[in-house]
Image 1 (cartoon, rainbow, N blue to C red):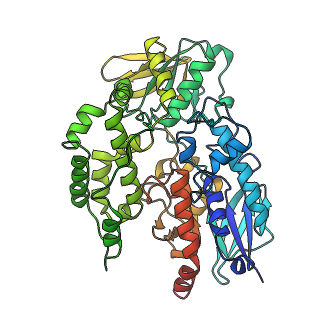
Image 2: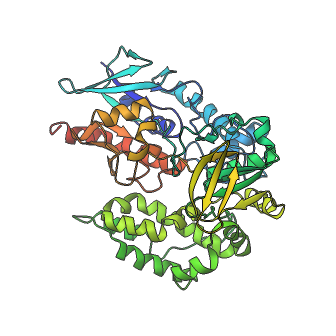
Image 3: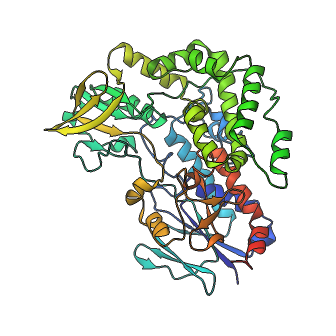
Length: 493
């Protein structure tokens, strides 16, 4: 009898899991039946790359993103084959979603896949048989499963100003083309955008294009992403090396702490020509529009810093879980926001749209917004420095993350998983997993050998697990190691 394996969610991480299964030997694949669940809107595209306004761009150049990281030229080949422009470094997210869907279709035809175009509502573990039962669309699914891969990255939005339920508050801006703004609101004098990350950049650009409103943007930090610098020399890393990483993770009891990080980080900064982190913060990074301008003023230095941030993020896949919680918290406080904004930069054309909007006084970055309150038909932005400002609508673009405070807004499946104690929320958000394997750590059962989580669901225990390439690598590591993992743990579970 074939083993039935469920992949719940068929966006970026679900497809990464499927791609990883495709690398198994044919004789092993012949023993499996893969059942893939998602609704028709997201199946093969996920959330970031659904059909949307063309102003929403991918944030990686076309030669730095791919359906399969083993073939990084595949997207450019697909564009060429379909007679699409390859001279421009960026394309719309919608177009990349079309490519994903195309490649997913080809992949699924090669694998023992059954498609179910519905969302999973509940997941139950049957301890006597060690099998899994699903509830789909309110009905018990007829088959039981021996293994589950959670790839349902539709996470709840963050709500830092507690505006959920306000009539003039839009909690989730995506897809942009469906933003629920009336023609009257689009012509109003002011709309606020909560957030200054990549999602906020998308929303601001869309509002500038589609409305006549002025825009007030802000976040707790007010730091925008840096501007991606595409061209630069190859960097020979001297301290964050593969030899160093291998030495750490192959120790009898691997460990890593903030002191070790700062020592390596400082040396690598100095090798790149910087004196220390304080100089970097003072000279090359800044809140608000100034930060965007600095990226364009110092492209050589920003290129080096962006490459270093990417290197740190890659190595933190293995090093982050080894750090004590207090050290991770200290790292986030000192370096976290800067590393994110360097590692996740915006396209230059997006940056220039924002700078032009500031020049034309259509975009303002508000400082120190401490509270947002409803007053009559308006929302009032209260600042610690400059009094208050009124807006007709507030659009939340702070992003998605699963934490205790927004669990009530999570999908029925995620709430079910937490309530039933199959899963737990990690200290840094997302679901707790065994980092080496992506197996779920359950408060009831401990490490569950046959329950895996992927993608945005583990963005927390895995540092910055939000790029297509990193998600693919993590999924591949889990799938290719799963056979030995299942054998080694089945007797203790």
